[in-house]
Length: 166
Image (cartoon, rainbow, N blue to C red; front, side):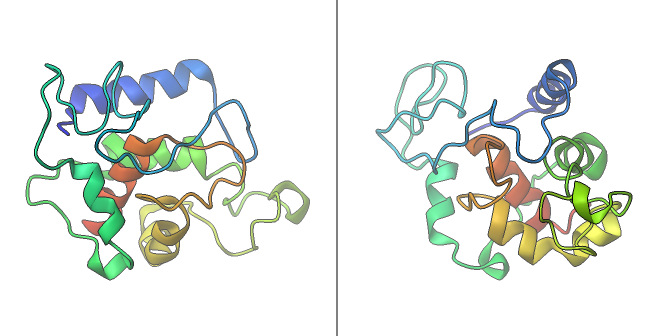
């Protein structure tokens, strides 16, 4: 899977145009980890996992590897990662997490998110990174509780967190 800054910007723009998809929004569906030979609607328009843009099969899909990471500590940071808080992390958290995990929300506005589990800034996100990964990134589908990001965005979240949420 090759993801470019243009794709991330397009994703951010899409979320902006669609409006904030906060906690509990059921208008988006999440999908399980893509594996070779199975349909993966979020891997790219008209592409299946394990299939490159030209329709040829790849030997190993990056997203297939997600299955082998059982802990956050095992999740590698690719040497060529370009993800930052500005081009990925901040928009992701705003779109998918801040509707429930913000210190500005009262207890009744948090949709059962525990008080104090807030992702208001990069430092707090880094502090909660193992828990965020275990609930939301890669093939972990626990958050948000209804709907949520697709497989590719979850994979990128795993990468960004594994790289220290720069």
